[in-house]
Length: 344
Image (tube, rainbow, N blue to C red; front, side):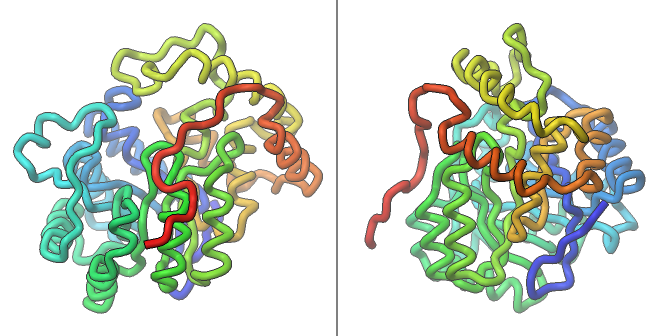
């Protein structure tokens, strides 16, 4: 395993991290807490993964509790990243958190401190290494009091790195651009970015490069919801409780056409590993968060860090393919969030 540092801090993250939403939400199949804890421990002890990403809304705190159980007594060996912003404490939310419908969001100072205290309690720790505001919108980007509260939390030693996570779906381009411009001391952004879905992640990175010098990126949906894992066929059927079951059939068929143009990346590694190496070619990326469902996949993804870097010619070929949508003619992506500059 290789490690990268959050700029301006002593926080070092494994290039391959572990996002707990596959273990705690049920969106990718069901896992017991014992199964989840065992996978987390193996990820750390066998493969050197130390960056674990979760959120209070993942299973209404279940993901955080799983981490606490997995690493009790080893807090100094791991990096905890969590997210706040959804009101999971509303009584209706306790029983209704299923699927991808958004819960009400709250970002006033009192609520943020309350939510952080609950995260600390569930994680059994006195500080959060990386705290991100979950799926923020433009109205939150432009509310300076929100970001001042995060700075105060950092000054108090409760948080080491603060930032924002953007989504759901692919969008939120100008939310991220404007956040980097307004709050140039932001430490990190979590976003969707992968070989098949390069927009709007690429211009978000460029915005940070220009206006937020210490902002690095932790990447989710690294494999385009599993497409870049190379396991799908035209006959793939998703489980009833798997969120991919609700996607249109064209998502599967067009995706398969695209990944067949990437066979040149698989001479020294799997397509899933190459997808991670493509992300890690960007210096602004501090860690990647592939969706890990089982021990075989953990082995494949965790060992990707030690595979050869993609060559300049391979990177250029990917760029050329992406410029023409990998040879597939399809309807343009429907984005959420602000995709054109809108003045306040």
